[in-house]
Figure 1 (cartoon, rainbow, N blue to C red):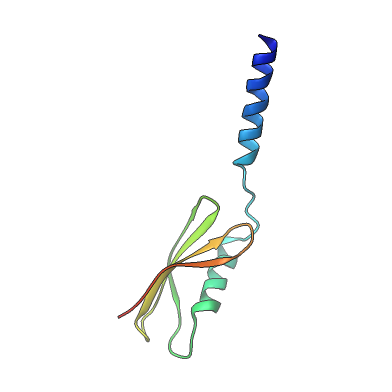
Figure 2 (cartoon, rainbow, N blue to C red):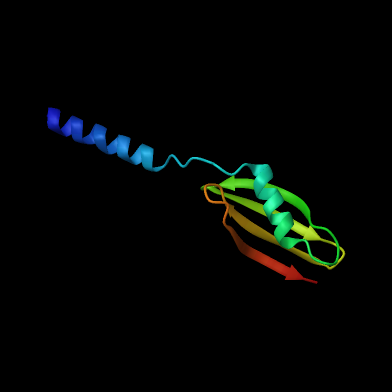
Length: 89
C-alpha cells in the first residue's frame, strides 16, 4: 500500500512539474517582436489583442494602410514567432 501511495505521489509531482512552463518572454516583448516583423514600407502595425494560451502569446494585429491583418503566435519561452493567419483585403 505504501508503494502504491508513493508511486501515485511521485507521478503527480512529475506531471505537475511537466506542466509548469516558465514564461521568459514578456507580453510587451512579444508585441514588440510582432510589430517589428510585420511593419513594412506601408503603414504601421497596430496590436488588437494579446492572449497567453498554452505557453504561447496569440497576438492579433492589423495594418490599415496596406489592408493587412492576422494572428501570430509567439512562444513564451523561446520568442519564436509563427504565423497563424494573415490576410490582405
